[in-house]
Length: 188
Image (cartoon, rainbow, N blue to C red; front, side, top):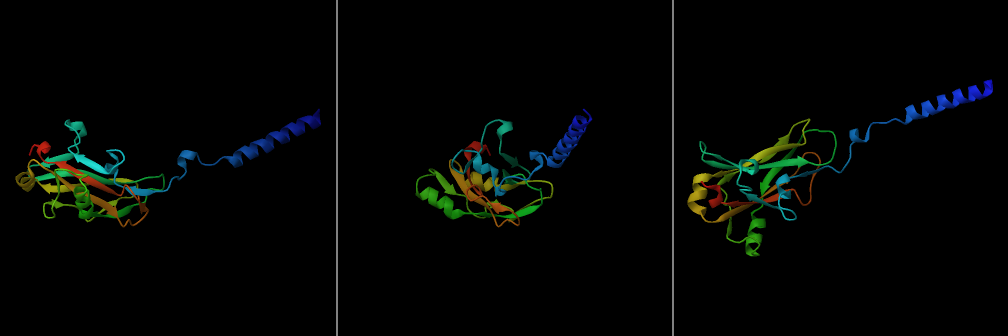
């Protein structure tokens, strides 16, 4: 009986040791995924990269701000890093792709639409996401007076891309977005 008790005690010690040694971090605490940087607005219309402005008629779905004081329409854009990895800071360059919009217009994939001309808008040349975050936002700022005066009754479009990341890599598809603005719907 004493030998059986000693074997049971020894077995309990071995099992407890094995359980303690096998405990690792919870899966939720582990890094996972292949981190990619993308523009989240590229996902709003399904399989294409179109981002319609305005998106909705109510204030909850509004994706722009009319800044009367500075005579601007500010279209909300951003960059986001996918995957669950340490939230180190990173920066990306922001650029435009006029050739993309011109190709879409020439192919009749964008009708009653013109390229938003340079000089009518401002974009930051780069954005930085700080430590502890995985995303940040920025504006495509458009001169509202010139937009209304020159493009009333039309749509204007601009392809915006996030490139040259300081860390992580851009998504091969969703690192750009086609911003399509219905000028009359803005009610400038």
